[in-house]
Length: 79
Image 1 (cartoon, one colour):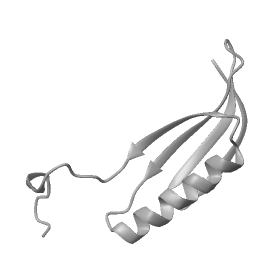
Image 2 (cartoon, helix red, strand yellow):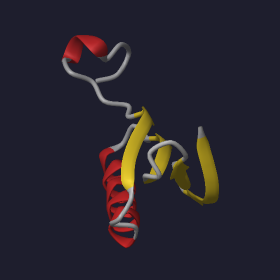
Image 3 (tube, rainbow, N blue to C red):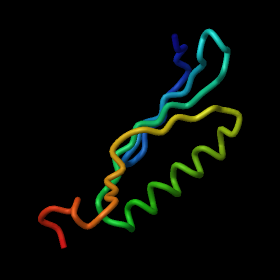
């Protein structure tokens, strides 16, 4: 069970802040969507890094669509 405290929305992400009821651990759950271009990815990573540094005492879980490919074969229709 999770106790909701607050949420923060930014370009490409939403973070929910709260506390895991059983363990009493305060945590941040972040769902994100990365753009396909590198410059927007860098901006989002910097925003998330800064956000995380403000809430240092929280345990973090980041999830979502990272729009990352491991090999050129995964890029269909894109040069």
